[in-house]
Length: 209
Image 1 (cartoon, rainbow, N blue to C red):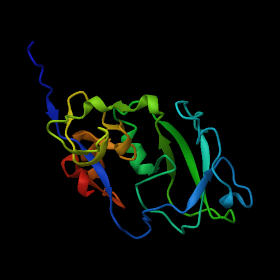
Image 2 (image 1 turned 60 degrees about the vertical axis):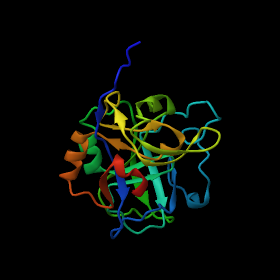
Image 3 (image 1 turned 180 degrees about the vertical axis):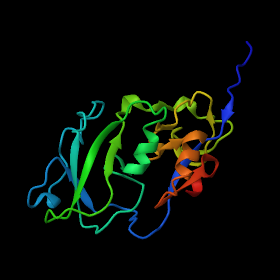
């Protein structure tokens, strides 16, 4: 049987970069509305939590991030099992071939309800069923460390095949679930924006992100 070779393409991802008003971790919670004391309430909503194997409820169109952070200038932060992205970031990404994402407009307020003065932000995520299958990983050309059980322990570098056709996507592999991947076209467009708080790196350097 003749072996079919999969063409390999360069892909990119985003690594955090320390900059003013670009906290690495978001100190806050997301709720549907603000009420006094909401900062201290857990996120138990059905759009945030579902039993194993069950899909989460669809995101509301509008959400509120209640945070002790004073100001945000970053373009992307991964948190709350999704991603908080700036308006300019999302304005670029949504014009590309990105599959299906759920999007909520994000109001940002202090624990006392005072609005944070900055540009618009969105909370975006994908349901597990929408993730790109792990078969897009070229195992032979990637540098991956495995556990004795056969599960992936860590990824030092990652090469994807031509089956990864989207411009902005996540991969259905546990060790990669907090990472968004970019096509060369998406990386070029985002690079023109002068991103804050993140930098574009090749997936060949994934272990150093």
